[in-house]
Image (cartoon, rainbow, N blue to C red; front, top):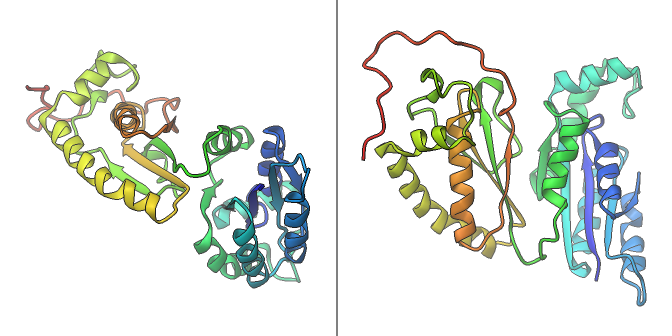
Length: 302
């Protein structure tokens, strides 16, 4: 039986680039496929003697969401595994991409480009709600999108396992939208205000020891353990294929990075094989001025 990834989403959000990545990974890619032909492709992909095990179907913007939803329901009955990947981006980003490329939106009918983008977004909202994976490409260039998809599809994860990703980010650079759980780490003392730790990142042992050494960090991780023990088996039982846990601090370089690495290790102890990504670790720090005295940031205590 074959494994299928169906790529859809808003025009300009990166369907073609995503398809290229999966093709590089060895997937058999069919672009701009009408939903009515999905069942025919499924039959060919599962015919006796076929050598095609992984098939990527890219559905174009002209497809009706109801028609695609019906085709997916039939595909899920017969295929070993089906993943619906929905690509999205903000209105402003989609408009800018069309203005920069000077391409015509495929659904344009005389409306301004912003009105067309919003009309398509509203029509696709039910399909987005049914997606197994939603990837927001607003802040991703082509290379970053490739890295994101490699993290999701680059491994040989068995179909029965839930693939987990732990992501660190900085609230200063925007909240990631394509995640399942978001945990705010800004309640912890910030290594940014420690002169010798400021230029380092949460991957450095000194920063890691500083962040993990506080009593509130230990309490946070203990309570998170209880939450993971509750959620992970429930997600697996419900058939969830992908889970992304995001941890955020102010800049995305210190606290969130150290905690993301720690959370990933705790997932490994539970039998998962998480992929770890640090979205903002390479961004430069913005402020070198120490904050006004308010009692200090404190130091870790046993």
